[in-house]
Image 1 (cartoon, rainbow, N blue to C red):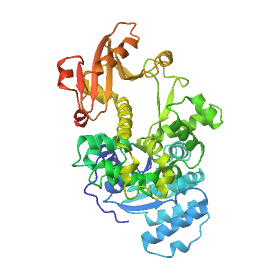
Image 2: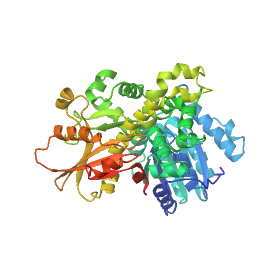
Image 3: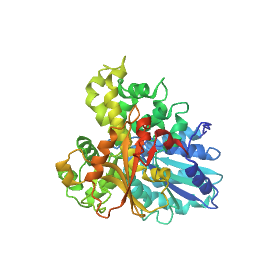
Image 4: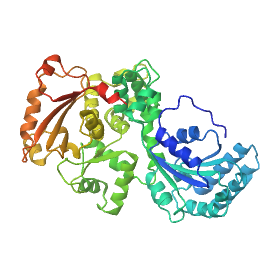
Length: 481
């Protein structure tokens, strides 16, 4: 296939470097890549290997009614189109081995990239696909030292358990890549020309998913772009939820049950999740939770001072888009489907409610980027534990008590962060609120308290002049590469 070089391809410098090193490897090689739907796996591969001959084979989306026979017919059709030879689509093969052997003959010489996209669909979530691939790899593919075979998928459980950890490909899958969402700095490059505030709004709403960011960047404002994609009938963001589960997590209904349960609760423990979906909190649940964690769809956390024990972990929806979907899109699903907001999509998203929600999303962002914040504050070289602070005891007595982010440092300092994502500067009223939290925070070792304010728009001059906070971080500080 002919790849159109995208001169505006952004980010992925580390991943591109790794793929180029693999391309220069002096033997045939297998690359196993997995990551969340729309994280940019295909674009990364095609742009990095644009100077190589590429054959891309893609499975038919979903598993209902898409058995292996149908998948094989679809692959033969793709080969027919790629070779411009209608003979191939008329072939009838009963095994994957026959198709792999056919491909091996087509690419037995020369610089080739054979790219299987969404392997879980092609394999119909069965291990036989990999077993048959192993046979042809050993007996044909590997003899072309310039061949790079890429197995790519958005189902972590299948890619890890059936491909990476498969005995069939043991010691053959030389390279593995888990593609993560783009960083905030790369998101800024995609949204070039937008203010730091707009970029952070987009990132907090949709995460570092390049396709999402590009879609909401088409209008005069990010806010309008989000509304148009989320609240118009058949809008991309309004229908993306269903596509996520078809592509990434179609093999079990429990995945969706867990996420929807967590969307209705602020958080839940493993035992509460197990009880809700009706399974024992053992191996099956562990597999389900690990898959969702690898996709980034859920997140786990505990209070920084508690041991990282499974029984103490709390789980929450961790994917920015999914959190936004459940908060704002799903409650309006029926109205969206009737086209109620087609003319005025802004009416569907009240700014005050949205900005308050962004505040909670910003807190999550800061906790998940604690090392970045430690660098900003100048103590990243010191060993520390970090996280939110909460306590069942204090929750009963003070329901709203939680410290947004705390660093327990090896130099006997507690860095306590107050996080505010406001449209205005933070004023002196914050002092009373912060003092109350410090009073409730146990400090038996009498460690030094280092007070930090993380405020999107900074602090008022009056608050700054009081020298209450030892350091203040603003939104612009997050955009320093």
